[in-house]
Image 1: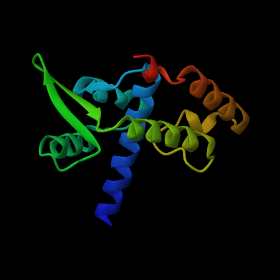
Image 2: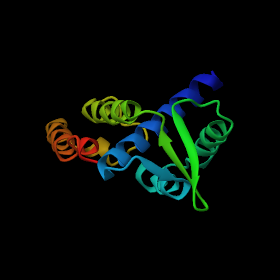
Image 3: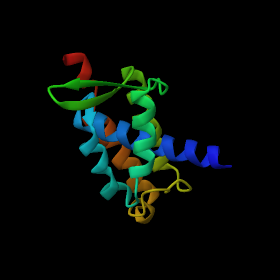
Image 4: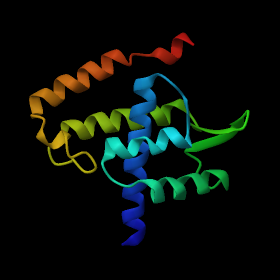
Length: 132
């Protein structure tokens, strides 16, 4: 049961990171940017992120890679398709009335409005990586 809870927590965290990085049109993110997600998720994510980042540094978490630029440790999804999938999965969650876990504000948004939000987000985050 504990492993299943951790998997759900990890997946929710990865979806949020994938959503935010994709919307910002960036591939790399750092620890401080992940910690900023606490406000978005309205829950403590420190233990979840610490577990993930330790696994990344130990090279046993293949979804994310890590490197140091200057003296800042940066993280990146090992392949852009992971980021794209997590972005799309987060959008699908937004459309699902039953999946408001980790985002209490979204629970109050009507379904029709969610569809419009997701279409707008998807349009605004069109294939930016192909231009770089």
